[in-house]
Length: 84
Image (cartoon, rainbow, N blue to C red; front, side):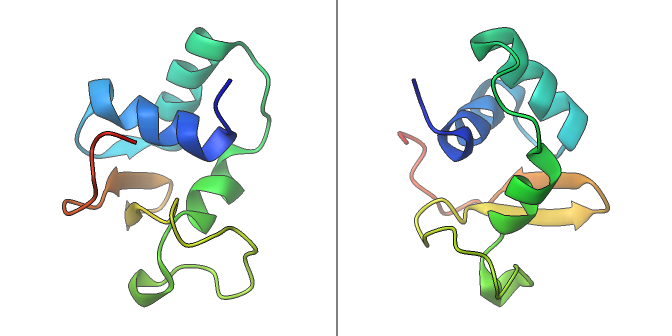
């Protein structure tokens, strides 16, 4: 069973492009069941600090692979490894 951040990254592979939090949550819930509740905070914490991510987040650096493109909408950073 992946972690929540791993499941979020996994969701972007088939969904592609820019996705709203609810789209990602729906994909993850369909795949793994409603195991996790708060996707909005986790996805915000997955933005690198240099792209405006949360300075106080305790999430490690490796899953910080999202870019916020609009309120509640994110995309995978283009230069990440897609085999996560």
